[in-house]
Image (cartoon, rainbow, N blue to C red; front, top):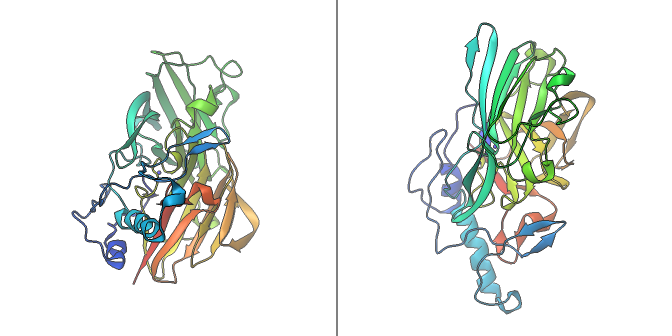
Length: 359
């Protein structure tokens, strides 16, 4: 999720660094981050401005864009790529721990404000579940009984909506419609059973002052595994990509902006499952270079006919699941194709990562 989350063991990004001619200071093992030389200070660099109400922060500049020479522009682009994947503090989307109360899985969720590093040196106020954004990934199976004890340490009331899950009306998480808001300092408990037929990629997020709270970071992935794995495509490893736009960095993948996003590292010949979740306010068409995606599920439900594409348009609230056959070795760009969400005169930023296919 701050980083791309894989269900299989996490690899470091040595393959990418070698191909780019950059040496790693320290190799990252799961779930640590790769540390690489960051050069002379390129953090997130892009054009400033207000895009549909989302404030974009520009990189420090000593001259205006129209004074940048071709060589200077090239140097900024190169510096950002060589910094990738840049080390930052905080890592969201890791598995949420639970305890058992009889046959019920019990999760503890604390809503709290933290200082979140989106790109190296770029820290923002984030509203989080358990101190990270995206919040820890919840992964259960059809038929599981779950309980969520939610404590609110925010300065506002809040709630949690289980987006895409079929739950009793009282557990749906909409203040004044299905429950009272969870006031600052208060707690609330949600409890329900995961229904059969509800497998797939879902989300959990605030449903109170949501345009503010969700884009500030109150969001996470909720994965439901099928009781019968043969009902869905087989895969060798999986990654979840949570898209967001707003106060935490402008445009982000799993709570981070390029060059602090993490790559998807896979082996040639593997089948890679990618789950996309759009928690932002804008549409984001995600484009993978070099290999097609086979989209087989939307909003958790199997499609009657899978289809291939290289650019997948994901609207707010939507989830898609796709398989990539990792046939082409190399480092492949992977980004939102609304180009001002991903690249400017100063180089790539925001919604950019890479798929690294190792031999």
